[in-house]
Amino acid sequence: MPEPFKNRFSVSLINEMSVHIANQFESFHKERFIHEATFNLNDLELKARSLQITSALLKHLPQVTVGSVNDIYEKLINSLTPTSLIDEEKAISGGQISEHGIEGWAIMPLADFIAFSYLVLNEHSEVGSSQQQKTFVIAMQTLKEMTKRFTTEFAIRHLIKAAPEQAISLLNSWLDDKNYHVRRLISEGSRPRLPWGIQLSEFVADPTPLLPLLEALKDDDELYVRRSVANNMNDIAKDHPELVAKLTSSWLNPKNKQRLQLVKHACRTLIKNGNPTILSALGFSEIQLESAKLTVDNPRLLFGNSIQLVLTLNSTLNHDQAMNIDYRIHHQKANGTTSPKVFKWKTTTLKANTSINIIKKHTVKHVTTRTYYPGIHKIEVLINGHVVCSNAFELVFNESH
Image 1 (cartoon, helix red, strand yellow):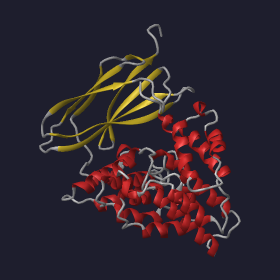
Image 2: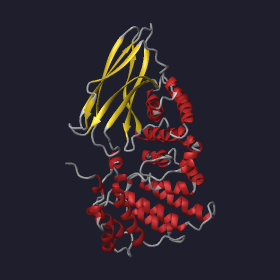
Image 3: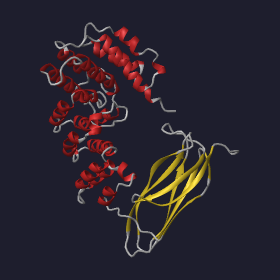
Image 4: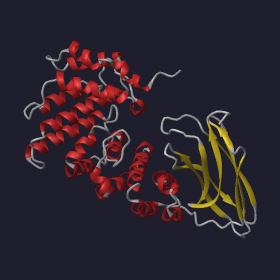
């Protein structure tokens, strides 16, 4: 059985963190920090563990003041593994603390310390004042250095939210940074709806300031960065579908496969929702069929088992038709209503004057993101955004139901 994900923050990691921090701060009391950072650790999940470590740092590191901010943040940078010793591939998945310094998952609570201490320091400062601008730049630059060892995409959002215009200006100056983790931080840290992160409500309402950043990074040499650009665009598409559909359509280039890959990933929500603008741009026009039928092999499905879907399509047209096929299941809810969820099926071509059968297995089992309830579940097949046929099955939880 794999080790629980929350154990990325272990007693051992906290002990190792304390050694490197104590090497920079003479007044740092390792034993008290370790005691508070590890308190009831087994009862906490990953994010709660990280926040508890941050709380202990805020209590046991020197208080950040206008006069000490540069010195404290610089010492924390000095506690990190030098960039010359960083394995950039491991930095993506989370490296380990070594004798050289802190890196990997331990960066998360350190980054939050930077963000939270900055917010406390500037809670009474006027946005745009010389003091605020100075400390903001120092905090942002510190997170920039930390992200080379492990992403600071969650912590930087607090700073972006506090001073969005200043943040966008600074992020713009990082676009040509040679370290691709920094370039990815620009797009990932500014996502309006980043999972696990605080929502950037200003950019949910108006994502326009983000677009020049995403435009500049869309052809980045690193797939890691380009996928982040696509994720940011997918966030924006949830609130501004036509904006994203039109912009990404203009990015399409038949000679550029990377752009096509990025656009498909950026528009995955729009494609599932049948947005006509992006589907048309990708070459998926409204399908014309002589007949379409969806068959299920088991109209009464026992929870934990699979159902086989067979889609039969017949075309009498004298030309081929490109098809983006999805299926939507209307899941039963506790109150008797249903909640639709779209699943990817496949992309294919229906040849002229032909009939085809396409088979898909769908499993209904326990997942952390959904609670299943018994009852009738309707299935709809969507081709190029339009429902072409449907069927249903009854979900039961034991043989007697």
